[in-house]
Length: 173
Length: 338
Image 1 (tube, rainbow over the protein chains, first blue to last red):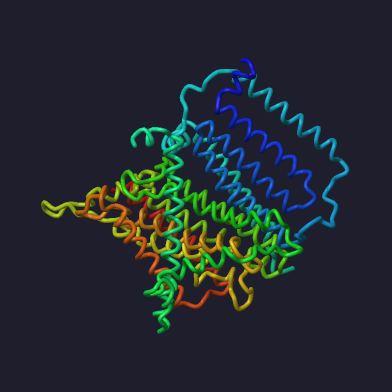
Image 2 (image 1 turned 30 degrees about the vertical axis):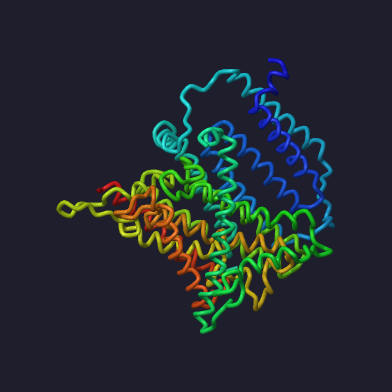
């Protein structure tokens, strides 16, 4: 397909805008000199990914990203940063890391792997049985994918217990 | 006229304009109600001269006064974050208006995921509160922002769990779907069908939990520790002035309306009232139910002292969360058994 044809589709323009916003804010997350700014840029990046899910018609996943990641995880990030150390303006502590180039390389390799794996395995194929509505999603989750679902809940339970063990203070010592 | 309604973008623009006008007007009416009701509860008259009679123009005059004021930004503040924060809070509140059904047809968009969307959109406002608290470069603001965030996290859980009870009852997440499910007759007494909203179909504990969590989410007394004047000046609002303060203010009162409308739709039957045609009287019925809930919220504000911070947290985690889990289990059991 020619680029002119591709850009003529309004959906592709929206995709382009969201994609550029995600990449730009993701770069700012790692380059920003202020931790709070980095966390807020992460909000933009996650909001953009929610937008991409919306474009794909996966409404439930999109709102889950907003509710769980933006509404809970980032709030806890910000809470943790602000309750410990959060100067406005430039942070006095060096946020950079000596091994930033190996880290960038790993990130790039990760991207290439995921992009390559998904394009090779799916190609241009359309997914036949689209599970979009919350009702269908629930039905599929509790019939076909019930074992992975239970495994994930077990992992979460283990993480929960781990969190309690780490946060607990023994009265004896 | 029908050509205008057929065009998706024209209709979307029209809906957005109408929704924003409704939000503004409703916020002004609630502010006026708060001024008058609080005055009468304290044996005062309240606003009296503005607008000729009853002081009806007082919120308008207040709004104009705020808009004229200088938009101050403290020297040490983080300018972009400071300026964006009120917009994030207001946007999060306004976004919940999308799914509120005023009648079977009068709704911006009846999403399949209705309630879930409203909870997700509402949770974005928390980020705005934290942004406002941090970027002001003021310890009172920071403390207020942190308290607000801790409170929102703690009360979000019982709020969601109370909603899940209703969703199990109705079998759908769509707001209109939930209202329609309540319009179905609950049982028949001889020949007459008895219609009951969910609050009388066993969700009364769910409603109580939702209402308490709603007060906490809106930072209303007795849960107004984040803006406790006696210790934190105005919390995260301390450094704001002019139009940006107005945005927070409007957001708070628009949020009262949005949450009350969601509560009425989930528990009180929304736009449905037995014997009245939902198409014609729907908006009036919903407004009456919202008005009742808003009155109760104002009443509570001017009656109770505020909770201490640790009491507030232990109330959420030790009482409301377990209670809402029990409510959920009981609702699910009844749904399966009957």
